[in-house]
Image (tube, rainbow, N blue to C red; front, side, top):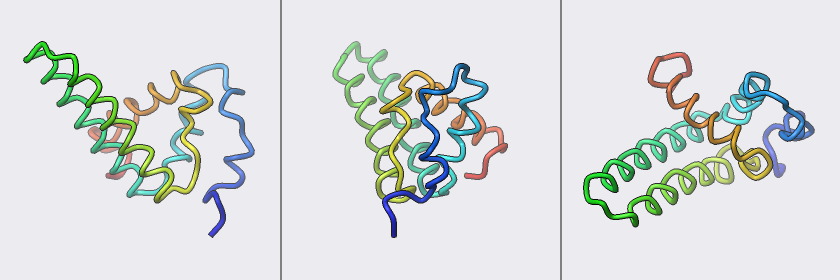
Length: 113
């Protein structure tokens, strides 16, 4: 297998997008693998749980745990199943927004879990 599952998508530089609305369809193409999406969803859910725990316990270490859960599961999905590089390396803010937009869209049934 090649280094990427989406050679055409890799030819697109995520830094070329000037709006999140233009970036989001690219983001979704980079998450076409169902296992990758599920790992993103799991990581985001755990990150929210860690955030809630941090607020409840007033222990900031839970914020670090949330970051590790969120990014760890997402990167496992990209490198292990999607076989591409996360857009967060080149477009961190849009990628972060994309994570939560996809999370919402999965909950709403717009994107298959």
